[in-house]
Image (cartoon, rainbow over all chains, first blue to last red; front, top):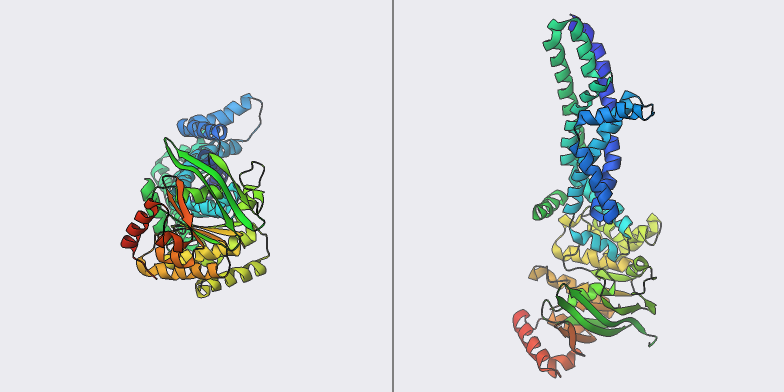
Length: 227
Length: 252
């Protein structure tokens, strides 16, 4: 019975996971794209900065990043909430992973596309914007779905710096009713399975909506040549 | 420089590592002229075309388009490229855009025409290459010959001063070559200024105003088709023409 009474609270807490998910994956996207572009097209300086960024945020454990951004920033006198700290830490981490997805997709676009773009007078930046990215982002949707499934689960790590997300709420229930642990955490697990399912369905729909006839096959062949 | 010289190429050199693929190439192109460049593969013909619009920057040498020095560091290269059509061996249509959008893109983003006007011009050029009814088709839905014709329409839409063709039929199945050559022949007859790298001797013979024979990174001989085919000055030119005619046939 208590499990049922706890359900609304769990669902409400899960909204914070969703908010964190959107924040971190959005931040990861916005930062990941330039990181990928710097790595592929940037000069040595930009490429170096991008690679250092990627190295750092892929190499440091998530919990350490969370502690750095929350406790570390507090020590520097920056007052940011646990939620913002979690968004930044996990978002930057995701940007490193997303940049590798985008970099791979950009490099899978045949060289002739950039040359053809230049040949009609498009600048490097225009070519990236109108030719390379529209193709690369389509190619990136399937691997990006993986990243999505991965970071949605990472949102529970925000527990460690006191964000009142679903795991923390579950813990709050089970501390009072330890016999419910199995039931409560199963509910939490189900909620995540549901989110992951819905998210991947949404991405599948997006992929289908953006489908260009014959593009996938051709792009897959090009990717194969590189890989 | 004579006033009707539209393209002037002077002493182009290009080196890849140890190999110097272009060792000083110069030629001029008059308005309305069609020049066909022939020669064995690996002899720098494609590199030469790419050096003209700096898709590949040459190591040395200068290029003028209609009196503007393309190779000058202060020249806006994007603006120049918009005035030089380029047709690739493997078409390089933008794979995520349909035929109409491929042709229209430059008009919208470079010439900044409004959508109505851009569509009108793009449809006219698609009509010109006989593909108006394929406007909504994506590259993957078109045959090689059709893709190449769309790419010619894409070049034409920019209203270029000259079009460079880099072996435009080499990647095509034999039965698709004709439709592309036909479009190119029509263009030449209509007075388009063109440089064509090709092994199609029938086309060269019937359409070219002048043929350039290149080998080993230099121009061995240039002259009218009549002269090169019947009375070449260089022994090497005759040998090559005999061999290529055996290989590809006399054709049309």
